[in-house]
Length: 414
Ligand SMILES: [Ca+2]
Image 1 (tube, rainbow, N blue to C red):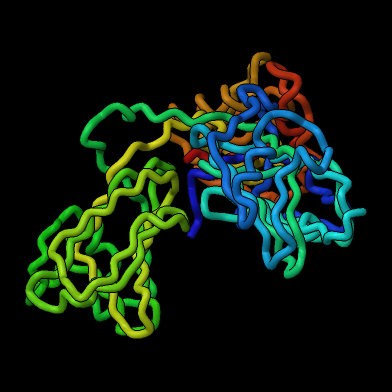
Image 2 (cartoon, rainbow, N blue to C red):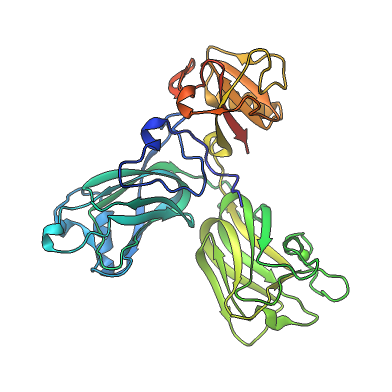
């Protein structure tokens, strides 16, 4: 499922060329730019941490002292899939993660930072695969998250991190003081299988009627192995509470062994022969989806309504658009041509064109030749070209890219 809130940006050639032996692994194809430069980004701070072994030592990586002396570093035992995890003070858009390693291999331990993943927000943002390690390296990350996890994929290696430095922008939550928390707006749902017509929408249709018989008010999966139901949010949020409405006319045992997760983080676990009508789970987790996962080999997920309460993040313009690529244009037959002419401004920059097309109610915008802003409801008829052809600086902001000659830097407005 496409997560529409994902940050859009453009990385020009420097970052798309991964160093030898590594690869950039992205679940979202759009790796990133710093279109808009790194303005507004700052060093983010961790509030706590944990690691797979020697757990107290994890703080050595978040003490803001940058020493690669082995004794000043967080290190795990040599073990299978060693990991280090730091929790950010506040949920944030993370653009990069810098890892400072130590030259400690003389101690005869194998370095888990040869093959590892960096993840946050329930997804992997970078996979490093190499037969050599490094002392200091910065990795692009592009995620909205409340934590960063560095996890080795090796079977017999230790992780040593002397400092983990994260850059990005802290998210704000306008309703954070509101109690009870408001309902989080949902955008989509899915489930592992569907019994009859009882699709996932019945659990998010706003109708909490749970006398299912005859009418059919509930989402139901088939009877199967580890069946699940999930929903995603319009924008990422801090989830305070997930409330499940079980069927009440029969079959309540369908919901007696399951887990509730928020972006792959455990919010609640229910495993009891006692049945319930309505059950509330407290989470306080940041994420972009909720999943109810059956934990038994044979079972059915039945949910008549799911309410997710919490605080939605207020995203910046950069986080509310998605980079689509660099596209060819033709003066005779303009690609994004809902209007005959573009808006041309010497003060053009990406946010300006974003606002112009957003206010005109258009879905896409393209910036061309440093100063032209085109709006449209579709794009791409002349084909895509490499990002490097859209590297002309914006007239209004020289550190930002604004397309090229007959080349549109195209974004979708979310
Ligand atoms: Ca319902």
